[in-house]
Length: 134
Image (tube, rainbow, N blue to C red; front, side, top):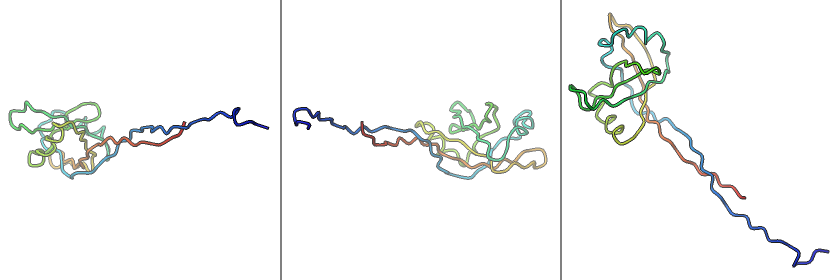
């Protein structure tokens, strides 16, 4: 028979474990501007597929557009820009640390230039806590 004095009290404390996950929030459909000004763009385009991820880089020192957002392929090659008519909000988001990227929707050769339709996304990191007991 166990006596009350022999029993040990074990306290369980609740610990929150945090898990990071990334979500993609669709923002806008657009196209890549300036593809006709990129030397040898054909060799970059042949490596791309529908849904290829393209990264964005701010180009704050651009003499023609202070809100310029450069679009690059997975290897870092410049493909063109977010069109000037669309880039103000995207530039502001990026200037405040937000991660934007695009996925290719369609690639068409129009005469001597490539029309590349893209979907623009915001990548958001979410921290989810998972309760556990120890």
